[in-house]
Image (cartoon, rainbow, N blue to C red; front, side, top):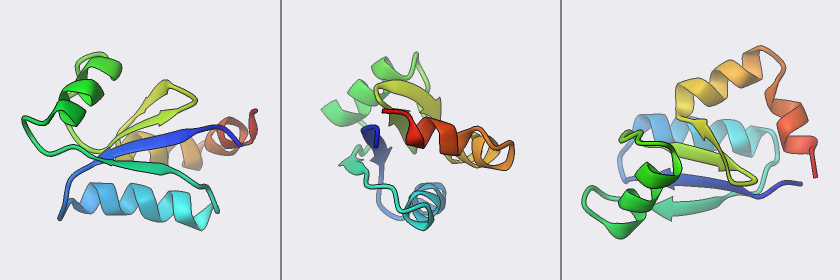
Length: 86
C-alpha cells in the first residue's frame, strides 16, 4: 500500500469525513495535526501548492487535495487504483 498522509485539525468535519472514508477502505494513514500557524500547517501548504484548507491529503507524496477531492476520486473509481499502487 502507498503511504497516505493527512494533515488535520481538531473538530474539523471535513477531516473526519476524509478519515472515515480511508478507514472504510481499510487504508492505514499518518494523521498530522496541523493547527493554524504551526510548522505542520506551513508544510501542508507548501506541499499542496498553496492550498490553505484542511484536510490536505497526500498519497505517496502526491497532493490529492481535501475531503471533497478524495470523495470525488472515490466516486469516479480513481481512488482505489491510487491506494492499490505500490
